[in-house]
Structure formats: C-alpha cells, structure tokens
Image (cartoon, rainbow, N blue to C red; front, side, top):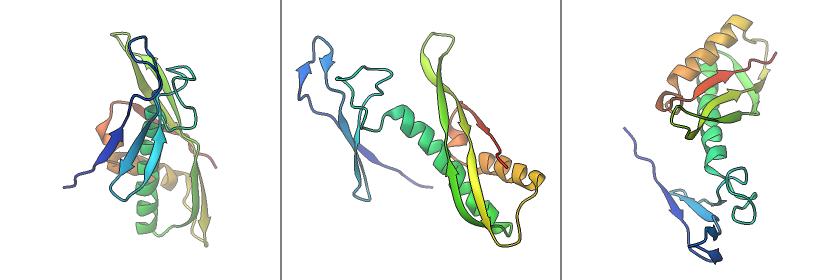
Length: 154
C-alpha cells in the first residue's frame, strides 16, 4: 500500500546527559520538506528540559487521530451528497496507567464543529453514521487500541 517516513533528529546541546538534565528539544522532518520543532511534553518532563513550544508525541498522536477522522469524514460526506464549508475539532487525549503501571493515551475525545453549505444537512442519524463509518475507515483509528469517541455537537 503506502510507506510513510519521518526523520527525527536530536543532538545533545545543553544540560548534563548523565544527570538527566538535558534538553529534549528535537526536530521532526517530513518528506514534503516541512520540519517542526518537537519536544517531550512539559507534563511529562518539566521545563526547562522540555520545550512547551514544540509539538510533543502525545499532542501529535491526538492530532493524527483527529486529522484522519476529519479527512475520512469529509470524504464520506462528499460521497453522500453533503457539502462541508468548515470542520474544526478540539480533540482531547487522556493519559492513564495500564495494568503494568505504564502511561498510555487511553482515550481521545473528538468534538468536531462542522458547518455545511447548501440545503442538504445530515440528520442526527446520518451524522452518527458518518462518524461511525469515518471511525471504521480511518486507518489511524484502526491502528491503535486507544478508545476514540466522538462528541457530536449540534
């Protein structure tokens, strides 16, 4: 099918590595040429050893789930005759401990706000079906054990 690549770069630049007081700042680079500043989450590794301005893996995970759901949703909506003007989601992921006491992103709640253009707007049942089908066709959602829920806003 497809192959997806990212290059992650970190270089010891400040702090004391042996004492754990080193910077977690690094970069993510993608095949299209985009590079982003990244870091550990300040909720996991305190500032100054993390950089709140960088994207952290937990945020990226939540964003990947939300983005995949959105792209699948707008594709399915278009196929079913709905015209979407805008889609905005305030997705929230929650960390918890598993049975081995290891932290993981156990749940993600998507809360999309969707504006439609034209006369045709989905009913509550059609909207639920669109979200259900989007979840089942989103390859990111199908790749993770995280509980993903959609908070359908009217």
